[in-house]
Amino acid sequence: MLIKKAEIATVAVAPAQYPKDGLPEIALCGRSNVGKSSLINTLVNRRGLARTSSVPGKTRTINFFNINDALYLVDLPGYGYAKVSKEEKLKWGKMIEDYLNHREELRLVVLLVDIRHNPTADDKIMYDWMKNSGCKIVVVATKADKLSKNQLYKNIAMIKKELQLSQDDVFIPFSSETRQGKDELLAEIEKCCL
Ligand code: GDP
Image (cartoon, rainbow, N blue to C red; front, side, top):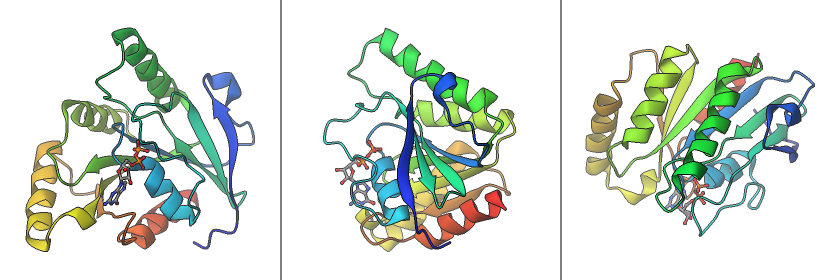
């Protein structure tokens, strides 16, 4: 997929603010600081489109990026940031749930996990929950450039086992530094929007 247009279309805190034009949507979710903003910028070849933050846990909105007037990349708020109140965490959870549970335009959920670590309890909850709700899922393991090849294979096996991925789940090691996995992920996105 050749990306000619990528721009922020809507910043939403409630379903009433979601786009109404019915374009297919690809949602991206993962824990705070996993590399979601970097991945979006890498996918669309634009450094500052999604804001990468040195302060994790800042994004409290659902951001819709219009891609080629053909689909939306939907940046869901990062979860699992320790330094926020319980009340704030519940609010984020509800925002993510409201979107994932009820959005008819949703075609694919991209779950981001850090390739260096075991999936967190939140990652597992997200994966199980999405699986049960019947969403099509691609698991992307970020920051692949940070591991040696040997370690990479070990960790891929570890993550697959820990999340109990099924055969039909697509798993993509990804790096915003080297762009590894970019074409593969774009191809998966394109497939879901045809
Ligand atoms: P977000 O909170 O999920 O949006 O995460 P960011 O995209 O802001 O990234 C968090 C931190 O991880 C930043 O310091 C990024 O530079 C770094 N980072 C993100 N992706 C990669 C990657 O693929 N490779 C490396 N080496 N660092 C990354």
